[in-house]
Amino acid sequence: MKDRYRVLVVGVGKRGLHHASAFQANGRFLLVGLCDIDGARLGAAAEKLGVTAKSTDARQLALALRPDVFCFCTLPSVRAEMVRIGIECGARLVAMEKPVALNSVEGIQIRDMLEAAGLKAVVSHQHRYGAHYQKVKEIVESGVLGRVHTVYGTATGWMMHMLSHLIDYMRWFNGQARADWVMAQASGRGKLTDAHPSPDYIAGFIQFANGVRGLVECGAGAPDVPEVDYWWRKCRIGAQGSDGFADVLTGSGWRVVSKQVSASGAGSMNYDLDMQPYIQQIADWLDDEQQVHPCNFASAWAGFEIMMACCRSAAQGGQIALPLAAAEDELEMLTRALPPRKVLLSMPANAKEYAAL
Ligand SMILES: NC(=O)c1ccc[n+]([C@@H]2O[C@H](COP(=O)([O-])OP(=O)(O)OC[C@H]3O[C@@H](n4cnc5c(N)ncnc54)[C@H](O)[C@@H]3O)[C@@H](O)[C@H]2O)c1
Image 1 (cartoon, rainbow, N blue to C red):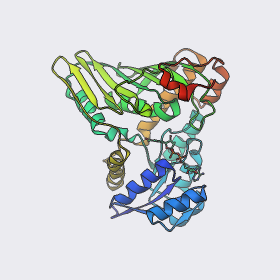
Image 2: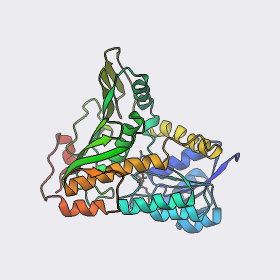
Image 3: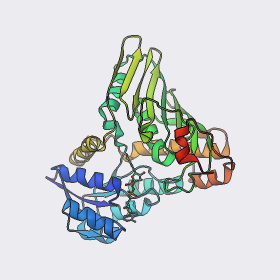
């Protein structure tokens, strides 16, 4: 166990700054370097955080610094190469942003590289640390919902931004169950060329191995969450059982209605608060093999497979069995398969994002 784990953060945009600041604020870590291909952004971040070791070349800096934690917060198109650098520089843990990858070709590459290197990795599904998310988890665990038969998640933001989060928290509410199969539909080509490339709308059914049904909807056609004003936080994730339901709204608290109890409370996603325990649990896992991080790669992988299976089903039709048998480029499949029809919206506010074909 080390007093302080040395950290390099690559990609200092919005999330990179969140990570770098949270590592710096935690006494168990020492932020030793920063990298970004955007020199101006890098300079500003280095000055703000008082870090002298900086470079626009991630490999060069990583090999020079040999950090314990290699953290990268690049856009989703940059993944496998960063994991490779993390392995080459001898890091003990790779901390990365969601989604795991843009397709299962790269996803499987990353999974196999991490496995072969025996390297710990975490994927930032940190919304779960919100007090309102924790409350719903506690309610589900308490048994007041009776036999849980359904978990669900909806978000009006598009797939590569939001689906990874939804599936992760649904699996959490469902005891981390793996999925046996998935069946999905998708619509709208407008976001296929976005930096988070996605169909405009995707909706799917998940058969979890414990018999629980999963329902997901992400994008233009997902239902409004009128209790939440902030468009990106119009997400509802919850569980339904024989005796009631409980759900969390990313931007507006939690509620439970069951035979035994009816209650609600406040809460809204907060990056500053959520990053603290996420980062602390990285130190806990590095200190002690038994304290596996809740956002560990294996868990994120199980969610990623579900997301990719949704894409395959939407593109090919029918049910897709899990685990995925072979690597495919799911976005390419969707690009070929999605009809050139404009997506239909669930509410006028979605037009600002999904107006294009
Ligand atoms: N977990 C969450 O709640 C959450 C929230 C928002 C975004 N994200 C995810 O975080 C990731 C980053 O999103 P963001 O909003 O911070 O993006 P951003 O565009 O603000 O930052 C990405 C940075 O990476 C840099 N970069 C790109 N390629 C690089 C390379 N090869 N080497 C070094 N730097 C490189 C870019 O110059 C940019 O500064 C995405 O995968 C996104 O989905 C997660």
